[in-house]
Length: 431
Ligand code: PA5
Image 1 (cartoon, rainbow, N blue to C red):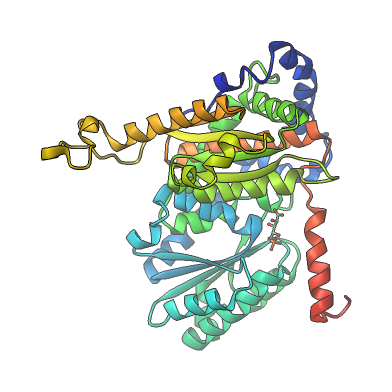
Image 2 (image 1 turned 180 degrees about the vertical axis):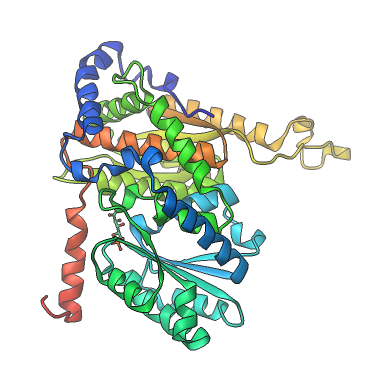
């Protein structure tokens, strides 16, 4: 197991003396983060989480996940932002985008938008099925989640009665305050904790992500073991012995050269939701004071036939981070066809994933020669341990990058603006 950063395709964009120049600042940013002396330091609990996570809660979580699997056909996970993306990203990366087509327990995510159509359709899917609900909100007051949960609660209580519903509703929230905590206490829902010192987008390896992930049939402790391996691997204190610091430094140098958009790309479609998680992690952490690299994503080779043209040849403000896995989950060998009607016989004997790897290599070279710095991050396999390490790596990069940029990577003041307008327009008391 190892997450590795490859930088051979950015040599034309960053010179050795530039690494030497940024080295001390990058080392300092890491020191600020790891010593807990930086801004937002009351939200760095994720740094030590792989060592100090609550073992008793983990046992309860595994028991709840087993119960959900045994008692349900459908698990509805209601949450948004950091209370949603991580779980879905990991489930789809481990179980593919077609997870629900193969799994006996279907997992649907609600409360991450205000679409009546989606809510209605998922409520319809629940008809005649055994259902459990995991409502996740650190604050307990997020509108999208609260509205979805109001409808879910009604459905559950109509179907199972108030007491029966309470046995099938699991609430993941702050341990000391909030509306959801009060409701969970009143109704007797089993509670799981969002630790006070871990913000939403850094919380996937807490019960926020791990309860749905475990219910989906994956191993929560193996994810934490992977994160622990990442903590050890990325413990060096300089750009020369820690790839997380090096990557953060490179992002910053490219940003200073006017490359203000980072595209996370992957040739593995199951990575698409992980890209969404990355987008939130970096955008919400860095987009402040009119600064920051704008994170976006591409799923290849699909998107080579849509935004590929722009990446190759459009406005030159982009750099790209390709994320891949050494060992594919499965493979297929291409075979000889008599007559070679489709002209593909030249590929026979090679596997589809070999072709995919060549496509990645060819794309990286093309983008680099088109003026796009291309970084690559490679993990060994699409399993819990590697994904846990990948999560820890990106969280670390995000913290270090934020301090290099001079922002607090752990708050999100900008998210409030739309809420204030919406509440005012909806006539919420006090707005
Ligand atoms: O990263 C964050 O802090 C946010 O994305 C939150 O997770 C999101 O707004 C949901 O908040 P809550 O868990 O309080 O419902």
